[in-house]
Image 1: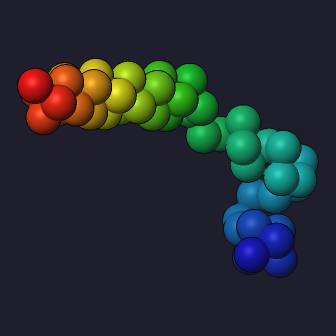
Image 2: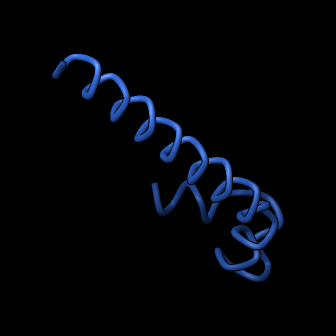
Length: 51
């Protein structure tokens, strides 16, 4: 996998440049929102099942 990353076109700056080209903030924000929603849904389902 490491060699596959190095073989990508435009790797003049190395892997750091490749990661900088990816919009990390929207991805992290979406992942955080998904985790929070899953936590909320699982908590509600657990409380309803417990009653």
